[in-house]
Length: 299
Image (cartoon, rainbow, N blue to C red; front, top):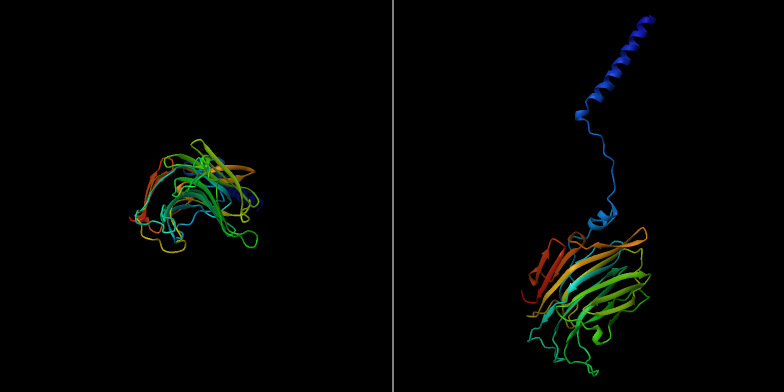
């Protein structure tokens, strides 16, 4: 009886060892599980952070202007920076402003900004009047000047619109290359910088809704604005804005205490062409995510 028990145990052990040997020898069809590795920070900056929120596929248009907007997701962005070529405004001679006969009811602007905790900002360049060397304000619009706009924020801040001083060092003209940025630098404060063609403007702007650690949306916009038409359907016009081009755009994001510039590629923004795509000619350059933008009031 004891001998039978020993033989049975030996048989079981032999089968077990043989099975292991078979598994080891069948390596041709066996692929070891590869360790899961995280994307490097360099890859995340280029293609998407591990926890990055994707932008919306579409977004409703706000009435009142013709505009091309590239809008980021609502995420832990700290701002936006872009290099662009200043466009040219061609006015509709039939749309003279009756209150200011030397001006028109259509205007051009290129700006950045965003929305944080319900407060919206538009900050950039708009075609404006200037002062000549004698301090006389022009009757018509002659150059692009910096402007800053914020909406009211709860009970803390009133809505505000302001321009940079009407000084020659703050005038930009069609065809010039400009770098512009808007960045949250501390709680309730944004730094706005315009630099290019030998000129520089910089201002720290109070915005109570913008703070590090609050998810925000940032944008870049090329527009034909219409006088006293905000919130209304666009007015028919033959005005055009041509020659605008964004060479490079980045979003600011902090990782482990360091602020990085992440390319604002087509995967990182919602493409808005308002009121209709037919009002725009957008030519994209796939090699570097740059694009040229022409706007037409009448397609």
